[in-house]
Structure formats: structure tokens, C-alpha cells
Image (tube, rainbow, N blue to C red; front, side, top):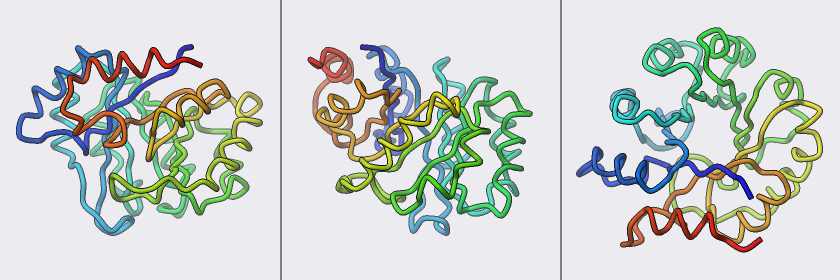
Length: 220
């Protein structure tokens, strides 16, 4: 079964980021997930523009930029100017007065437009944006910190999104508390990709290649 695996780089070892990127790349990761937090939209600071720029220059793999910032349209050019065509940029609809304007800027720059949906955000409130975006990142935890517990009521939201994704023409991605059990359950249902953090990939004391291989060999 084909599904994508992306590494949540906020969980990486920043003592040697170059080594982390290389080992993840050699281990077979499909893309790199970059969490940008401003301490306002979420109560935490995470990766920076410079971190994103460094990783973009260290790998040819696609980047997924997850903007957890207030009013991303005010600063969207800073990010788009340092990405490659075909990279993905996710915004949170609640963080912007006119999110469709920001999404159009992403499209005009040759990037893949996406929205991230918080656990407390209903599908109905983002329905029109689903006609614009190509990727939907479903947060199974509240945004802002790694290592949080899975919120089980998100499963019903994923089921609803899976039922309309073909008609709306978007792909669905999972972010937060991503375990092997979640992949086993939702990859066959149509979730396209999974963001891997501390639950499965980082801080396990084993080579990334072994972990990624074992995930791809899960028995469905």
C-alpha cells in the first residue's frame, strides 16, 4: 500500500541538523515537515525561517511548511521566496481574515496550497476552502507542542473528509500522535500521508532507516 511519510523536524536533534536531514533522506522519508510557530496563534515557538531555509538547501525532498502563525498573509512572501516550486504550504483558516487570499498567493508562487484543521474546527466551516486547496492536514492533537495525546473524536472528522475528498479534489494528511495503529487503520481508508514525530520516529535510539522500513512493512 502506498502512503507518504513526512518527518516532523521540530522533533529532530538540532545539535547536528545536517546529519538528521541526511539520515532521514537516506532512510527513505518522503518529505520534511516544517512547523513554524509565532508564540501567538499557538502558545509556543518552534522552527524559524532560517531553519526552513537551511533544510530547503540541504535536501531535494519536498518540504511541507505548516504555518501556525497569526495573519500569515502579512509575511507569506518571506516563506514563498525561500521555497521551491512544488513545496506545500499549510495555513490555519482561523488565523487569517481572508484565508482564500493567502491560498491564492501560495498558488501563484507555484506551491501546493493546503489548510490545517484543528481538532475544534468543523469541516463545515472550511467547506469552501476545500475547493481551493490540494492538501488538508488534519490535526489529531491541539497544535503547538509535540508529544500530545490523540483526541479520538477527530476520527469522525477524518471519516467525513474522506467521504468528500474525491469530489473536492484534495488529499488528506494526518498530523499528531501518529502511531502504527493509526496508519494501519487510516491508510487503507484513504489518508494519503502521515507526519511522524516522537510517537514513532524521533528519540527512539534506532536508525531512522530501520524505523521507516518497519512502517512501510506494516501488515494491512
